Length: 306
Image (cartoon, rainbow, N blue to C red):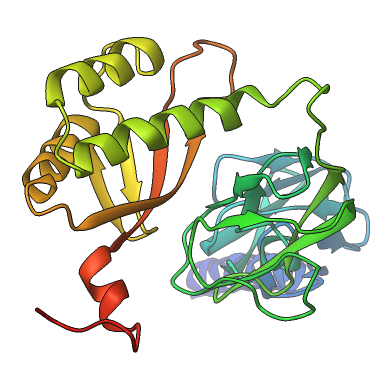
């Protein structure tokens, strides 16, 4: 009987010791003192992490994207949105988990320049200039600084400054919170003794050749002249008509040839542009403003239809 009593007491002691060890382990896990500054944060915004577990000697922070830190406290920046399971291991034994939601509406992203302006930095008074909006948008409002009003709603407008001076061009779209800005200096128009702008002279020459095609003059001589002299024999050079229609140079000239039979198209203005990277002197874009002579004359009260 005494023998069984001793065995029973021994088992009871072992049970109590095991139970106390279990409680101690649970107690140690519960005393893990760690925290994050936020569980909802934006990309590129610092997240502060800290552990104050008593007696801790080592730390391993794992941020759920293969990045790690081994400091008691510090800051970390998530660069991609998503949900991350942050894990802290203290003394290579105790663990704690945090779920962090990282959104993509960071202040840095909101302030990034979605829309930029590509245009000349200097130009001449009354010189027709091409301004380009670079970036995705659906609505464009250009202010060139002379009128104090919105001067154009085209994506890539053509504009001529009437007075010399320094102007700040503003472009507002439905995608940017603040206007894109571009500074340009307008010099007084040149006199007969000044060196003229090369692109302006090219535009004048091309305008005369295009008008010749629109008037039904010889096609091959005028077309080949422009193609070889200014386009490096590239018939696919882009032609933008009235800021809305896009065509290749050959097809556009063929269209002028067809309408030239009725002598109805008037070439009002031509502006040319090069790639701008110094790689070639060939034109990359030809902008044409043209009108239908018949429609223009229709608006004239003195015009009578035959």
